[in-house]
Image (cartoon, rainbow, N blue to C red; front, side):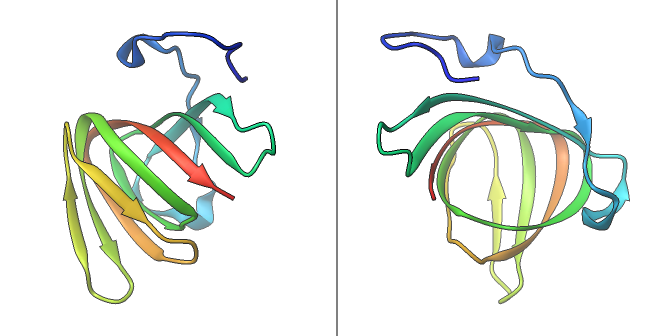
Length: 116
């Protein structure tokens, strides 16, 4: 659901409903995921919101994205061998098509901007 502009939200308080990840993405544990879109550009090619993932290990294929971690910690391993440690206050760039493995050590909440 997109918020109606102008708006202000306290990101830590945005309510999210978690759902299980698709089984083919789960490597170990029982990670769940939740998201709430807060804004979408009028042309629709850029969106921003809050996303959260629970503890566990999972795989993903990324979009063009910049995010800032609000809470929690994760290690993001890229198929090309790069590894990023992400925690509160860290800004991380992902590129469309990147294949990643997320090891979530503490439930991670981020604010994201995605270019589609």
